[in-house]
Length: 161
Image (cartoon, rainbow, N blue to C red; front, side, top):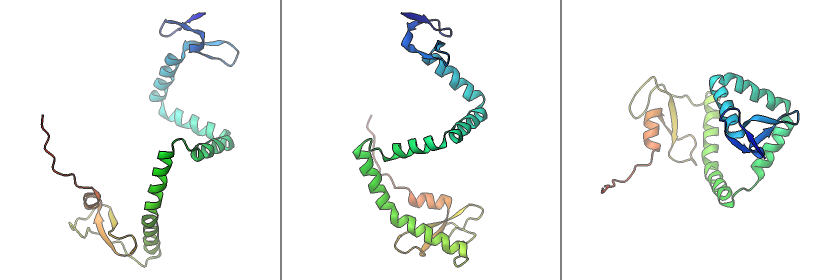
């Protein structure tokens, strides 16, 4: 049996319409209803944020349980292996950053005002670890110089058209 969508006017099978809370079918097909909802969210994003926040806190236990189950699920062993390799490789970096931040917070190490490479002031000064096993041996760089050091240089490749 077919039903006509009130937005697009197409006749579609009944399973293309969502059920309402009263046991009837919605007057709009699912794609039209999705487009209507997305347009409303774009028009008033604050309302969407408040709605999501309210729904989360009303169902907090269920949301936390759902997220926990999702994060434990091994959707793809290749992705899980990649995630584990990344975590193992980042342990030294995380430990070095945390130790340095602790020393800065305690006032034992002072963050300089200027970049040690370009001498620039006014930008955020960041600590660059050349060796994570030495957490207090850092080069203080502005964000631009730090980004230039961290970027992997691309080889010179000639493109033939």
